[in-house]
Image (cartoon, rainbow, N blue to C red):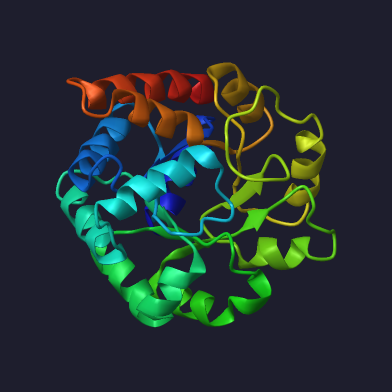
Length: 265
């Protein structure tokens, strides 16, 4: 078991739900990313997702798109992100998943990417634009190395495709709460519970909900029906708000702490 598997085993034993925090790697800087991840762990975050900046982030809304653009302008690359994870591993054992698009993985080389990610201390990978039907080679390399492959279920996923996605997912299943891109929303769709119950009849993997979750109240509501809650855009907004200010890390970590408490309680 890698760190993600161990974390969910611990949470289940304690009767708690997972809180997963997303930030864009390299925004506002890779050094800040390093500091934020360590602070998130201290704030109680169970898993951290690091977004790999990409020029055409199809699944991301304007908040994360802007963060990716800022990071790319600063020269952030996959290799630099992996080096950042290596530095984080000197002081932290928080599970880390990379959320990337397939283009950077393809250019890196699937097998080489998996080996480099594992060597750096990455525990899982999420690739929104890689269909499970075309992921066989990547999954073989990941399974051999012990890297979790986390696939997305969407509200539009058909019942025919669900088993394939669930069977391919290791670590956890990323359940997309809304049709569309990432971004904070005012309400969380009511049909989520029904879809999660259906998915749970087909897999024993934890199911975590993301996209559109932004407040402690929403985190509490989602945690009541899922195994974990993922918050991204709302945290990235906090990073943008406090970037360049003294106390940026502590301010963002304070916001994360409020979300953690909502998930755990």
